[in-house]
Length: 288
Length: 267
Ligand SMILES: Nc1ncnc2c1ncn2[C@@H]1O[C@H](COP(=O)(O)OP(=O)(O)OP(=O)(O)O)[C@@H](O)[C@H]1O
Ligand SMILES: [Mg+2]
Image 1: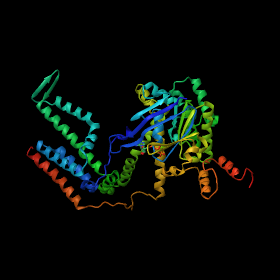
Image 2: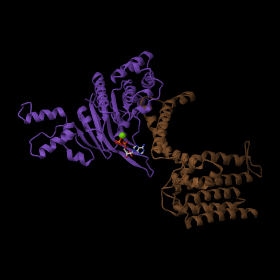
Image 3: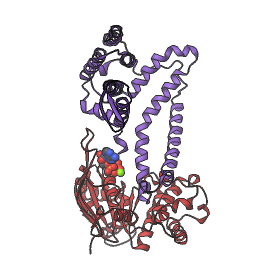
Image 4: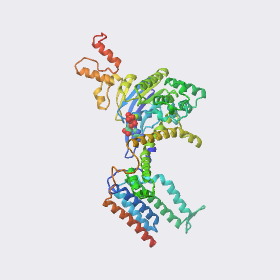
């Protein structure tokens, strides 16, 4: 399968040639396959946001290339603009970008910029709203009247309404309560399944990432430090720790159990797996 | 891009000029500007220039940084130079098409350009070597006598420090909002003037909303810390007048007197 997005020796240096120069990405090579649900983790300032802003052509590489479907996205101006619609990017705290008088108008901003017909825009807006579980009753309200979680979902719907092949989200659940988090994560999964879309999610929460993604990329200090399935990545608990990251709490519990002399599988990273592993240890007999 | 603007940028350092009291520096800049505009001839300008060069050298600000500050004004400088060159009556030097360059015009142009560059550099030196907060502190103390006339000096200074404090934040915010709207296909580059103005709405509305939100939060935070205005307020870092400041102030006064005396002799 050909990767839908690929970077080759991608390098980004902020404020080059000034005393504030800073290498945010250094020769990063990575690729994303169509339909994949991928997670990106990394310590604060490691370059995650910088990386994802390259994937839809918001930032221009200072070195290297970003390919979409095999073509350099900077090869021509028209293509760059096309890529912006095909790769939808939801920023951190996206609710701060809302500006229209009504929720409907705000969600339709993206589709309108795509110069779609009135009908098509309407269809997409309502479909996007359905994905993020916004009731029809809020569509004519001002986005500024909504609760924080609702605003966040309106902003995500604004990107989903462009029906991007690749949906990238920068910490989509930051600052939400557990219920709001779960809701947004399940909305994202619903979009991925319904459209067969590729999803890339940046997150600080190991639990959240462990529960959702099939593949995990760890960024450390402008480089890609690890790339693999969550099981593979979380098996390197001590290395993650040295990068200022952690493993999910469940994995920590199992690591401790192993230390205490129990023969358990330490590559466990969700509560489901934990339950299965513990039951197996007890010889498959349920109950206490 | 937006971040590259250097208005009022402060370059920390530990030179006598950095250590000087902001009041000394503000007064010195005022004397310097008056001196610059009182120059009667080349010798006067040379004296002011020497003063400026000495100050720049002591402050260890790089020449490159200074040139960068002048760069945005290059159009105004060129425009002034051309106007002076072609529209000053005097003895004709070169004549082509409808334009005449005169000797007086050439001299005027050179002096005008020198004057503008020296004006900018001198005032920039103040902001380069003084942090915005100390600068407003200095201004507040200098304007203190106006409090007798019930002028809201403290409030003005506070507003100024807050405004200065939030310039970088707002620039960063604008950058972020622009990127977010570009990700939704917003186009700020093409189209006619009206379309371009309309394209700004998706940036300005969120920017204002967030500016108001920040103002609200800041006001709450200030109230939580019992801020009630300038009455009876003490400072964390009170300003101290040192001998360095006396020397600085004397230098400024000597420069001004020197230029005025030279002017009497037509120099
Ligand atoms: N516009 C900018 N100008 C200059 N430097 C920047 C800019 N944006 C980011 N940087 C720097 O580049 C580095 C990487 O930043 P980036 O925002 O990609 O980190 P991140 O991994 O997303 O961090 P976080 O988890 O805090 O969001 C940081 O050191 C940051 O200071
Ligand atoms: Mg980030």
